[in-house]
Image 1 (cartoon, rainbow, N blue to C red):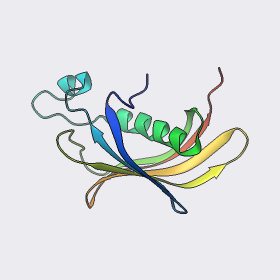
Image 2: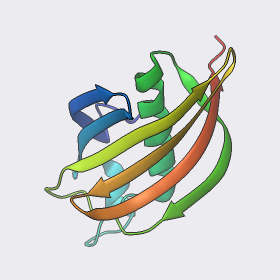
Image 3: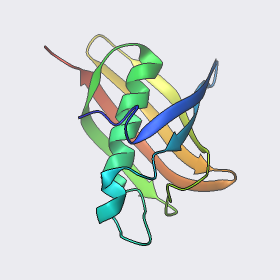
Image 4: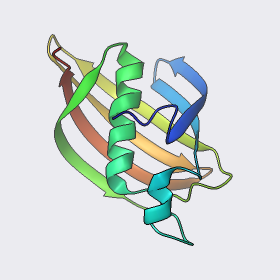
Length: 124
């Protein structure tokens, strides 16, 4: 299951020497928020991980799947309503079969999550 164009939507992409910066917004009406948690919706950490993999895939231009999580820190709760989320994909290291990157989520000046992921190309 992919979350892009379902749980979240990309509003802007800025590519540069320091990596790729995505500005996204969340779909507050998504079914996930009905269960997590009714009346006080927050984005589950596992969804942030999947979003990180999807945006890393976009950054490198090929479909990836999660291989290893080196570390992940959830620093603040991410509510879905009315805010732009910035996702910075940086410190990219690629070889033939694996891609490593750091991915940081933030809203304004509030850090939300930071993760170091290793992904491999999806085999079809």
